[in-house]
Image (tube, rainbow, N blue to C red; front, side, top):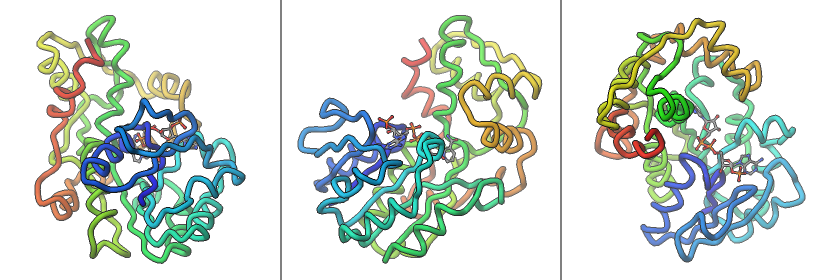
Length: 275
Ligand SMILES: NC(=O)c1ccc[n+]([C@@H]2O[C@H](COP(=O)([O-])OP(=O)(O)OC[C@H]3O[C@@H](n4cnc5c(N)ncnc54)[C@H](OP(=O)(O)O)[C@@H]3O)[C@@H](O)[C@H]2O)c1
């Protein structure tokens, strides 16, 4: 049985659907998940991963785990080593960790990855770059004023569709030959915020204006929903990415046998959220 944490999020929801459609027995976990969030036949467990007392129920009967630790988990004092130990005690033999490309470039701490590597019999680390779904933050302004306001309008990064992260995770959870691997996951081409706005316009069939924010304006807006350390790391990636962060990684295509989906495809699939 496979446990999927973060099961109501951008990656986890799709991963649960994919694994269930492929006939896997799945337990979907988040703090507020209900049966309405998952396909028929998927077990749900409401649990806060930051609280050790609920972890036994989360991993009961599991042999594989997709592990996602959110910013809220971190803010609540969550200890990933405790989560990994509970999984191991329950008999889990394989953990696929959703990490971040920022760990490889030294922008984020590597403690989560180290905890998983130290304890899990089999492990695979997924290090995605920026998600296409970060564009959901623009939805209220696109709905109201048909405008995307963002900093560094012409700095292009190969944002990844969370559906591709889920597809890679499913392949790694179900397949063999991925133990000990760290995969950097990007989209198939670098794309700037200005071009993302143009792709959203195409998806909507209406003009969408791009308004460039100063770094200070962006910092103020991001600080409303991100801790300061994450704001600074994100601004650094968006404004002054390294060559590695701008480069398209071959790993999605290596694992899936096809290139990643473009931002335009993500925008077309999610246009309703911007209408
Ligand atoms: N966005 C990016 O550009 C980016 C780039 C690289 C890496 N990442 C990584 O990707 C992950 C986010 O993935 P996502 O976008 O799929 O997630 P998401 O849409 O933000 O959803 C977070 C999921 O985690 C659950 N959750 C949050 N706190 C929890 C807790 N304490 N205990 C149990 N469940 C909890 C949430 O459900 P409930 O609220 O019901 O608990 C939800 O299912 C993070 O680890 C982030 O570091 C993101």
